[in-house]
Structures are given as C-alpha cells and as structure tokens.
Image (cartoon, rainbow, N blue to C red):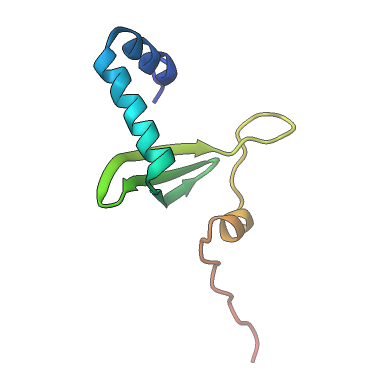
Length: 106
C-alpha cells in the first residue's frame, strides 16, 4: 500500500501550523531521549518472498507510545531490485526454525 504523502512532510507541515503539536513533539522527544528508557519490542510475523512483516510496540515504562506494523523488503545490492529471502537467511538471520532433517537408511 503506497502512502499518498511523505510522513516527514506531514509532520513538518502540522508542526509549522500548530504550536501545541510542536510543543508536544518537543516534550516527547526530550522525555524519550533524555530522561526515560524507551523500549521497542519487535516481533517478526511472517516472511513472504522478498518481504518481511513486523509488529512493533514502543513503550516508556507501562505507557505505550506507539504500535507499528511494518513491511520491509529485501533489496539485492547489485541490481537494487527485490530479492527473495532464502530459507538459509531466514533461519540464520531471522531465527526461523530449520526444516526437520529426514533420515534415510538404517
């Protein structure tokens, strides 16, 4: 799903026209990065082709600051095109369990 407007541009435009929003952003930034521990818990939900899907909950203490669903796409470094995530990479880097080994013979 494509976004119709850049997130950064949306936040910047609102901050320029809304002093209360601007103050709130500053307060959250100061609290989050100077005084408090902010914890992001990220869970890999699935891998499909070149894409991986995550759910993330960002907390400060017991307070939930944000809940995020994101999709990441693996890009081939040479061609800059989407590249399927191999089973080996999924097992090694994402912690997916390996396929059970089939024993042959006696």
